[in-house]
Image (tube, rainbow, N blue to C red; front, side, top):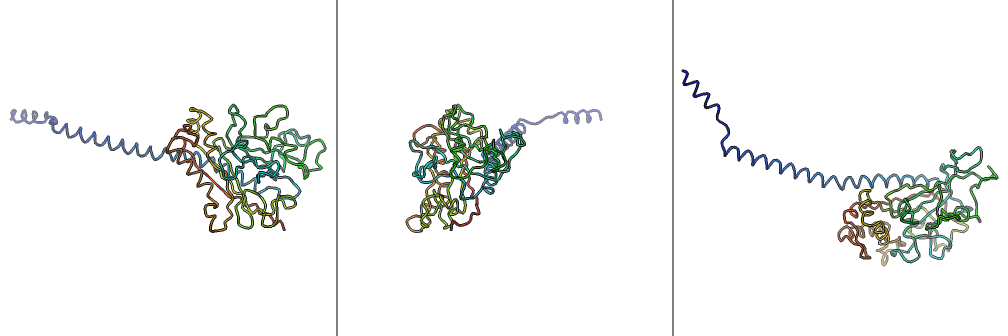
Length: 351
């Protein structure tokens, strides 16, 4: 009986055979390989998704802010607007290159400034309008800062929200002005975008704030009441050659297109050289008028600008170079997205 118990005990002491160990190791290695591949695939999928979440969030903030400003715009024929137009439209049109790439003497982006009934801080206003008070009307301006690479706002979207008073409220504070007084004559920073931040303060104003830190390209156009998308805010078919006497009466809506890069991509570009960002801006063409006249003009359509920008960005992401032959990190280009929105101005016809 004792021998039987002894034999049974010896049998329970047996471990795995070498073959069983090899099979177990192989199965474990296979499971680790499968899990690793799943994790890598998930990371590859999530990484661009995270980039797009960053750009989507920023674009939504910027375009929603513009929507509020445009919705409350003062649409009158007796106030000034700083809007782009043809090259001979005196004092206006910063950044407009008529569908071409950046040309000599031009800014790379559009600028816009107008009066709107949104709150703005009345910095410097007299009592009872201290600096901390909000006004009921503002001068609003948008621009991509192109002053200097040493400026923290350089190649970032800025918004000016300068609080004003209605006329007659105070004799010691600049109110909302009417033509022939222009925006640029009293607030030069709203219509300039250069390196001059000296005593005459032509480009610098404390009312500017960075609203889109990774928005590096800003372009807009007009959708006229006759259905055409143009680069000038009046209808030449109606014999109009300027905004004089009609204001925005010919304009149904303003379309805005922006380019946004994710923060990690921007940091990667800056590590190579901040100037590379400007090289890409130069490659993103300006808006071309879209007459919508059918045969012979099919290449000009609403949405064509966004398509052209996306093609340019895809080329840079594929090759790693801009058209000037300078290196641009492909991974940074892959983190760029293009956004657009149309803002209905609800204007009355000119006549």
